[in-house]
Length: 144
Image (cartoon, rainbow, N blue to C red):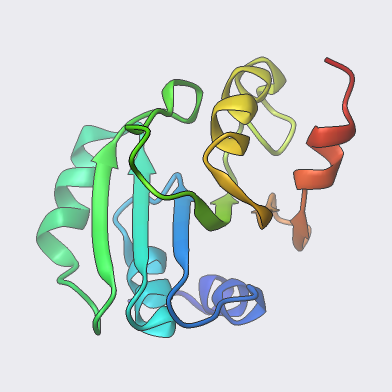
């Protein structure tokens, strides 16, 4: 079941039907499933570094609506997809240390990989406990 906090985040995301969404740090997949319900015939990929969380996500979260819902065990800093995979329209990471300032060295490694798999218009939304914000422009402006 989706917590009130995660429901507020899903409600605040600029989701639209048919999107391709990447959730980093998806844990057991409840937010990814809620996103899938919102986007209809889109695609949601949830990644998490925890094998046990991904195993639970795969067991507990059936496909929602017509969206394709997929889970993979992968760290943000090792994020990679095959080139034929279409880019993402939105990326979201809730309390993920690589992006909220707790582990900037991991963020520095992960961000170029993720930006390379996003559409030019895609937002990258994080919440570290102080509200949802789009960090894409901050990372694109950051010195090399």
